[in-house]
Length: 150
Image (cartoon, rainbow, N blue to C red; front, side, top):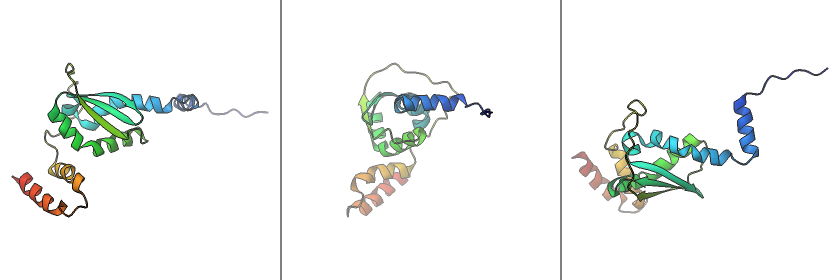
């Protein structure tokens, strides 16, 4: 006499099917569009759009060069946050490109607005990352701290 098994949850069946068809990573990559506003916040999300993910490189469209520069400095943190939410390191690099696109208003309750200016330590880390470990790092850090304190 055979024993009845408990039903398998639909979520488990879908995940197993996606894995068997080799579609698990493409589905996770498709989630990037929805994750992007959560990672960057409302103000940045209104000025950017995710593009394609190819060979670990996510293209992000940006409304202007000022935002492109700011996001470029935050690239390592953005990659880390995206991959943490995806559950695996799908995004290896971000490529920012200035492009004109119509603004999309996010619903007011959708996302909390981040501060318009990143915290001073984030700015400091971004500026110091290219000279990390070099003799000039401590001098540059002191200069930047004074400038940021003003």
